[in-house]
Length: 332
Ligand code: AHM
Ligand code: MG
Image (cartoon, rainbow, N blue to C red):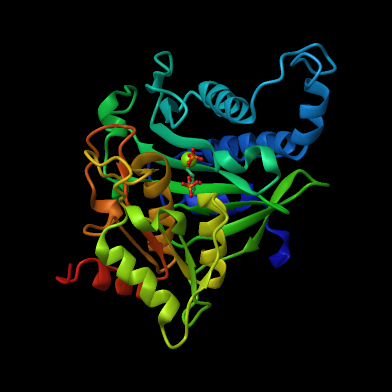
């Protein structure tokens, strides 16, 4: 395990790149890692809690059993609220941001999806937490404008995948690094330094193909091509973005959730720009991959609202480029 470098040692070294950070950036990332450990513990005993909770939605201590996504959200908000360098946070689970007005030393705000992969939460399939960190526009005050920023302004982003092991994957601007939680130590240890989308690589595609009839012709033609190519791609779809993304980062592949016409008046993508697409796109960029909404690079999109949805094509650069050549071709 690469000399068992612990997350805190790694981040302390990384922090030297940020002239304004005096230990607080390290503490913030460690706070997020702590939330990840707490959520990981809860995810791992979820089945048991469910059994204990069946009798009256109370656990053995007589406490209310919270749903895992609510638990994850409140865990992260509580931990951030104790960190006086955080001015506020926004979550996929909350309609509006939470502002920590007492934090007059605030420098950062955090945007997160506390537990992504909602359809897999109750069935013991890998799920994850996704996060972005931005530097506040003005130290000491956090407003909605701090959140409504392009993805390329992110200072750092990452995800924690709760799988057969728990892993934290992080970028602080350069390079992407993976840390595996050693449950016996309760520590994240560097296990995957300098992660890159491999090229050449496996030819995986990840998409909910059940939506085929709702897609534009170009997307349908692209998926037909993936299956009918001389060397067809292999379909791998878990239905948890973090897990599908993580597999493709390690083996190579493309994940996409296109715009669809399920709602005829309002065709749209499903995934959220701020909570899902942006953080994974920063990782993708720093791992040599590419992400777009079909027209523009995700990191260049100026958000209009916090819960904005986007079509998403993300993964190995050459695969995403090929997808764009089909989607944007003239043929209707
Ligand atoms: P969620 O934020 O409610 O969990 O929704 C996002 C999830 C992603 O993890 C996953 O890629 C996608 O929704 C799956 O959607 P579908 O079930 O339509 O295939
Ligand atoms: Mg989500």
